[in-house]
Length: 228
Image (cartoon, rainbow, N blue to C red):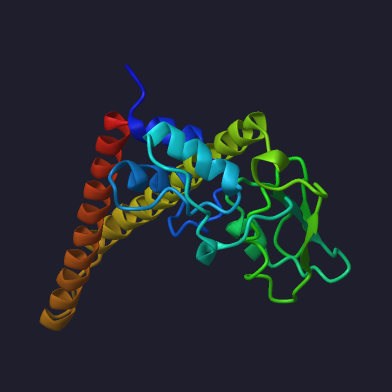
């Protein structure tokens, strides 16, 4: 199958997944450009060179980077001051490529080889212990980033998305199993009065509705998986 225009545009984006373009990730931005819903100069990490590459693919004129989305800059990586880290995991949750290691109430650290410099981890930190440190002096945009690094970032981003979906599904399955067990337990409870019987029926209806919602949600997820 030939790559779509969105595929080709995505391949020209740096895959930092920084959201500075105004979209939640590089792929949605590529799709918006392909659909004419976004301009092709909204990616600061790609810099002016990135704009030029997108313009060439689209057959459009080279235009300046829209600095309202951010300035082209030297590529940074996140560094955690481990002496002040409280192990809250908020930076781990914010990192789009799983470049931060750590666990709850334990010191976190950044893997610089995986960090895309998106700086999404900075704002959530409650103790302000994350700094962005420049690592490519004098080099900005695509001069500070390579296609191999972009491909690696994309792979880690997709791997994280799959992990989050899997974790969410496993959690939903656990909750569904608990709901089924609770429903069975309610069915076995003796009703001592009409009021208690009515209350038991009310709880059973609530749990049955929750089980049905979970079933439909899983059905939708399986349908989406098959489409992809």
